[in-house]
Image (cartoon, rainbow, N blue to C red):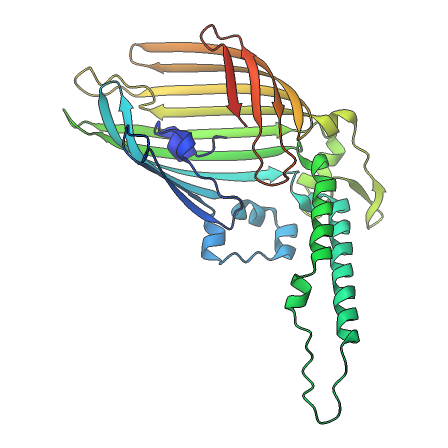
Length: 352
């Protein structure tokens, strides 16, 4: 799934997109302002649920309702700017809607993580009660308001450190879990000069599926039951009667499949007069990754085609590479370098 389906669909650079660091944030970016070339490109990405609900998220419903989780993970994208095609310019605008239909990497599927966080909360409350009990009791007739306030719980540095330790300990077990996401996009434009022709970028569809080599039993208890856990098995009504020990492939490998199909003006020749042809672009790719969140090797293959009018192009690419990541648990950026079999590609750098 591209970082911004709206920008990618109308041919604007994905580098101009500012992605929110979490789904409660609202961010917009303006690029090409200081480059001295081109015109500004505006991009916007946000999750409508958190904007209109003020960031409120009832955990009980999030845990038990899969459709509600999909709603909270739905992102709206808007992109507008000028796209250069040869010597011509097109004022383009794109809209996109992307969502995560299923994600076994969601922390709610980890019983061990939930148990760890429950222990952190219990310790936080115990320390808060201990501080409150240590406060001197008011004498008869004095103000009985306790100096203990709720903010004291929030400022518990030990709880914050313990919570981060819970996340850091369990994240390596969740990085490559199975995931399914979907994106839709549409776009329109107009030639800025000359004939002033309208450009229909048409509609686009993205599908991204990631498989973490989980067994059928693990997939059934998590995807088919909103109350299931990935790392433990329910027996005789007990929530976690038996721990699930992941295999080596479950811990270190993932298979990613992605497909994109767009109809419209994907590749234009504005030097020709008359109506612009409608083109259909299809991309199918697969990547096998083995490693961890910090370092991994991958094999990748893709096939793309472009058809419409007199155009009929097909391209195949294969790549072998490695990725390296930082220790940060949220918002980290990983870079990868690989050798591609495309005769004109050579060495490349990807942002993953």
